[in-house]
Length: 320
Length: 220
Image 1 (cartoon, helix red, strand yellow):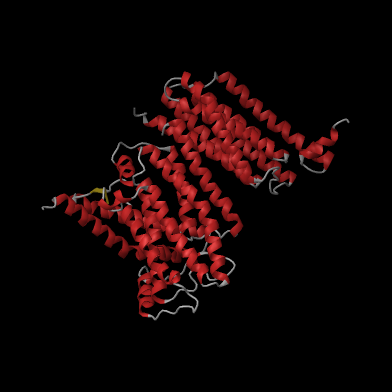
Image 2: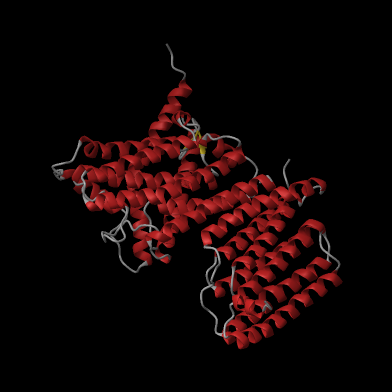
């Protein structure tokens, strides 16, 4: 039986995206950290620092607590797998990838939720105080962030009449330029959700190990070596996936079609430019804002939900 | 059907106006409230100018200039001086906590969108949705007046209510006659002056700007 050449081509595109994303994700984290360092008048560790950390962690021997169950050991692989899957679904280098039919935006939110559930369970598994503290805080933040994210995605879905990400991107990118007030609201809400979900500064600080403030770090405190490396890598992938969703929803212009090799270099160059700008913007946001008390986080995320709902309402009213 | 770009722009400005009213509702500080009021005025100026350009009504340019002078520069400056003289830069005290107020605000938006839907059906063409947004802004300004205690905040809310009405007038019905607009602008200015005098009177009588004290004035 012959396999149609366009299917092979689509699979090649899919594999390219998978490889590109998994290799480039630490670079984005490194770039954000480097921008932050520049803004704070430090010289910084360089954009390649996350790779060095990963290399170091993979070479070390893993240490496990005595009462760690299989759940604790399997979680890093599940989290990494979820984030990689999420990054495979999102149209990053080209629309209409074969994988993206596997899940729509609601399932995508579900994939993120699955990873979060496992990491929270693993944090509680060891039974240390920090683990369960971190897990509870993570759940507090994420149960408020998730409805806001869904509302943002619904707004984009309403505009393009589909919950499939490729359809959304196509209808936003390939039509005549239209100003959507509802999408402006959704974008604001999405930025807040991105900051909260990726443990960024107003909500959480990824560089702290201060027990009063840490959320994400408290959960992964017991991990070491390759497990920690996978979780760090998964965090980078998550940031990359979120930034890519943001680009796909709000700045999709210039993305390539599957099988269109000629458009690919331009699409990649544009993607690189967008990622550089998004990373720098994220760093600026983090530098200018102060870490808020944990009990202010519900209000912050409530604002995101409110903005997303407003976007949806305005879409209904203005049809735009 | 593709709406022309200029109308999309007016829609965007309307949405931003709604956002600013929400920000006012969430605001805890008087100074930021006044800044937001100035931004609201700036958006109003822009939207009036855009409507003037798109409908080629030249008198709307005058009212845009009037809005700029009065609501972006003069009134915020007056209010700023007032709170300096009264020395009231403390936090705004709300009657209901802020997240609850925001939820009430969302409910108000849905209510006014529904209320405006039949009216918008009658109006044809460009500005159908704007009546709903303007109505939502009016109701939200009323909500700010209801949920705040301090007299200064209530005056800012009153001015924001006037801004919303002005927006409804310019965008939905393409503006009132210039004489009427001048009259309203003068009214608002005079009202702010009178409020300013009132503030001093209230403070002299009660040693505070909290309007709860005014309940003492009732005869039982």
